[in-house]
Length: 213
Ligand code: ADP
Ligand code: ZN
Image (tube, rainbow, N blue to C red; front, side):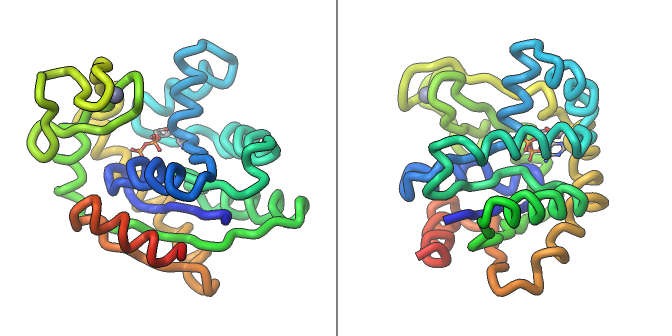
């Protein structure tokens, strides 16, 4: 099962990708997570990516295409993978098509999780994530029992440097300009579906599972 999860920042791609990965036993390939790890580790890629990420802009296509090309060649991707946050430009989608064709692979499902822009700003600026297990929280919609502590594992909750309002608005603008056209790239293939990301997380997950079978 090779899946692309699309949708604006805050639509719930990451959360749903993690649940699909657990349920179906295929890895979640999040370019955002991989880039954040590179920034933290201070690698060459991380140094190049940091400026774009801090402002809410996109990292260059050659960097993310290179990361994904390496990652889908790893053994754990043999049974499939979930792309989360990639492709984000039409050029990235074309590069992905070419790299899959070269390896005799194809995308089975492209699912767009849709959401309303103002709701996204409030979702993103209020969210935090467990540094240990990755569980997501929100100041209004999903408060942890003790402030700053993960209910599941007791880990510390962290917020992303780019989850402030100014950067979020820029990320949304970039999404509409550069990423929304990627949907048109896939819309006409039989594998494309859209799911309403404004519904409850569990409802969204149930709908995704119905599509994936
Ligand atoms: P979100 O979807 O919540 O905005 P991500 O974690 O997917 O967050 O990405 C965070 C940042 O990483 C983006 O704002 C961008 O700078 C960079 N990034 C992630 N994926 C890509 C990509 N495919 N192409 C270019 N930049 C990317
Ligand atoms: Zn945790």
